[in-house]
Every structure is written in C-alpha cells, then in structure tokens.
Image 1 (cartoon, rainbow, N blue to C red):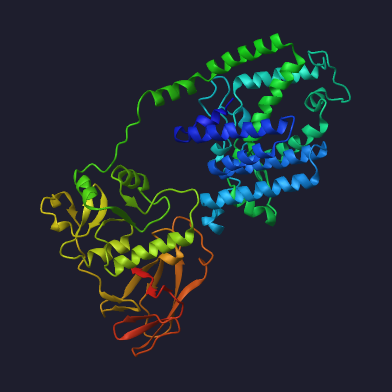
Image 2 (cartoon, helix red, strand yellow; image 1 turned 90 degrees about the vertical axis):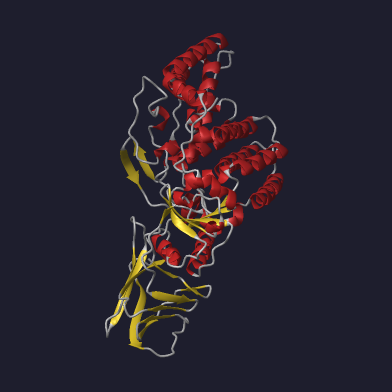
Amino acid sequence: MLNPGDELDIGKTFKFHQESNTTLAAILLYFSREFSARRWIVLLAVSTLIHAYLLAMVLALYLTDLVQRGSSRQLSVVNALRCTAVAGLSIAAIMWAAGYFMLGADAVSGGFGVYRMNLLSPVDPDDIWSALLPNQDQAPGAYEGFNFLGSGMLVLGLIAVLAAAGNKGPANGRVVTGSSWPLASALLEGSVPRMVPILVLSVLLFGYAISNRVAIGGQELLSYPLPAMAQPLADTFRSSGRFFWPVYYLAYLAIFYLLFTRLSARWAAAICAVALVFQVVDSNAAREWYRTRFARTPEWSSPLRSAMWDVLASRYRKIAVVLPHNASPDWKVLSRFAADHRMAINTGYFARIDRAREQQAGRRVATSIIANRLDADSLYVFQDDGLWKRALSQLQPTDVAGTLDGFRIVAPHLRDCMDCNLEAIATAAKDGGADYRYDPVSIQFTSAERGHAYTVHEWSRCDESSAMMPSPTATGVTNARFCICNGTTSARSDQPLMRFRRQPLRQRRNRQGCRLRDGGHEIVQLTSLLIGGQVSDFLQ
C-alpha cells in the first residue's frame, strides 16, 4: 500500500518507499495490543537516519501512542516519562552523529504556505494517475502536497461510507450502538480511548499540511498569520504537504476496516479486487510512463563535449567554482563531471546549508583570486564577472585562461603541459588590466579611474548584487546603496551602507583601518568592509 506520489521522482523512489514503510510501521505500533518502548526507539532511530520530516511524523505518532496508553492505564506517567527521556536522548545522539546540528539557525528556510497540500489533493490525479478524473489547477509548489488516493480507493471509500451509514452492524454479528452517526461508531467501536488521540493527531496533521494559506484548486480560500511561537517550526518543516502522509495511510486503513466489518469477508474481498483492477486500468498512463522510463537507462548529454575536459580532469584534483553558492549556475553539469572523474568540487545542491560557511568559502576563493594565489591542483570555473576580469588582469605566464564549451576557466600552469591542445580553449581577451593596485589594507586607483562598481560578497547571495560607489565630487558626501537583483531582499536594502568623504591625501585611516584612494585624494570609508583583515570589495 503506497502513496502514488511516492513514485513521482525516480531518484527519490527508494527513499520514499522507506518513508512509507516506516510510517506504516509506526501506525502498526500504535494499534498493537501492547506498548513496546524498544520497538519505538528502534523505529525513531531509523527515522532519524532517513529524513527529518519522517522523524517528525513518527515522533508525533509515538507521543500520541503514549497518550493513548496512558489513558487506557497500560502505561503509568512515570514510565511514560522514562520512555520519553530514553527516546529523546537516543534521537539526540543519532542526530548529533548524523550532523543534524551542523547547520544551527540555518536549518530554517522559507516556503511554508507554498509547499502545501491543496484541499483537492486527495482527488487530484496530477494528469497521469487517472484517465477519468480531471486534473486540478494548483499553485506552484503544491506538488509537495500530492496525495491522490487513487480512483479505486475513492470508490471503496464511497462504498465504505454507504455501508457504515446503513448501520447494519459488523458482519460477524457484533452490533455497534451508542452513536447517532454510524461511521463514528464503527471507527470508535470498542476503544474510544484508543481512537481519540490518533483522530486528534490526524486533524492536527491535516491542518499543518494545508498550512496557513488554505487553497482549493487554484483559489486561495483564506490565509492567516502564524503565531510567533509556531514560526520556527514552520520555517524548519516548510514542505507541509508531506505531513498528510500518516493521515493518508490511516484513511486507507479506515476504508478497509469499514468494508471488512460492515460487509461479509467474501463480498469485501470481491469489491476490493474489482476496485484494484479498476484503479490499475484507470492509472494506465502512469504505468506506461514509468515503464518507458525504467525500460532504458537514462542518457546524460553533457554540454562539456570537448576532449580537453578529460585532459583537465587528469591534471587537476579539484574544481573551484568562482564564486561558490548552493545550487549555483550549472551545478549539475559541473558536479556530474567532478563525480565521473573523482574530483572534489565546491558547489552542489543542498536542501539546507550553513550560510556563514558558504560566505566563508566565497571569501576564501575571492581572496585567493584577488591576491593571485591560485591552487596548482584546482581548475577554476568563473561565474562572477568581476573576479573573472580580475583574474585575467594578473595571469601568470604559465596559466591558461579562456572559454571551453561556454565555461570560463583558468587553468594554473597548464602551459607547462607540452602535449595539451591549448588551442581548444578560446583565449579570453584581456581588457588591459585594472587601473588600480591592491594590498591587504587598501585599494589604490589611478587618476584615470572615475566610477567604480563593487560586488560586496558579504552582503549578497547573488552574483549580480552590487554596491554602487561613484567617484566623489570635490566636495560633499556620497551615499552608496545596496543594489538588489532578481527581487532578492535584504534587511539593509533600504539603508545607506557606505558613506565616503573626499579629502587631501595624507597618512590617515579610519577606525576600521580601511582606506581607498582616488588619484591625489583619499576616500575615507566610514562603514567597515573588512573581513578577516582583508578588503572585501571586488572590482567588476
């Protein structure tokens, strides 16, 4: 019994099957006759190692099981607290060993309310999962809330509700009484304390799955602000649509329970068999899609077509992307190339990253480029225009810079290779060099320089962001503002970041120890740009 959404991404199929099996195991432990702390701890440990979202779901089911065991007096409060303490310590130890705490505050991320479940998700076939039911319009990001029950299960659900509404009682002769709503009687039959906690949990998970922006189809019905105390949780588990998975499996179990208790076993089995055949036929398009995908090995067509790439891979141990960012442009191409040739690389795609470490990595690479200290075992691939110009202006005689299959590269000491076909690399045209000199505490400009644009990596996560710093006039103060790219916002975006004053040149530094010179005058920087003792401005 698997959620059809588990198969939507072949690369995630195995992981999602693990998550499905683990969630079902947690439900099985909840409904088992006796509480087993050992099994719960093992299941929580496995969930921790699979995925944080799965851990949250299984942990919620575990805590709910404690509630129902306590209400039925199977477990005392002391024993429940003891089990919770042991489980908590075990989870914390495994999380530490698995690296959960490496990210710190950067474990949170935006997107809650985008990656949500739509109210029509249980009946939305997402094009290929039903030929009869129409596809429903949904907002971008709703794919995380794909929870189509399947056409056959929808029919079984309708039959189960009708059978329960008939109030004929279970087929084994037991009669359910004490409720004006027969469906509730069937669900709560004989064990109200057991069913109430998991029904409450299902309501809570469903509410979290649809998020604070409730939508039906392409229409948003309502939205409301989250309480401040709930915001960290929402930022951490932003793909709220996934939290319907336990409810999904409970809905399956409820349908089967009603069928096999309200109808005879023979009739229930026959109806389920017909519904299975119906769902298989109705979802034939999905089956054909996956058959086609699995029938042949996917072909990778890399844009790195030149034979020179293999030569470069044999000479260098690392690929240094300038500047490194999470999910940087062409990360798939470069990461695949690095993996195929057993090379290290400083980019990739990760769901969560440590922003401070990303910035540190960027500063290290940028400083090495500015100071012209290139690693001999690294092939540099440039995606930053300013640092590319800087690198071209100070190439060593044995370095090779140019374009290969559209990628701007600098290959240190490649001219020492006598057998290499350097003509395959289109030589980059130099622009005559920059009209400035750099040292660790200052940037000195020639009198010909007048307007300068700087990329300030410390304040930006996108390569195009810049702080405009025009050459000041003879008098007055020039305010430089942060320039936003691609709609990126910043806490400082509407505030002056730098202020300059022009004065006759003399040996003077401001309190941050940073100075910029323009001809015979000094631009005194009043806002520190020092990072680790280095000037962090890079000329574009």
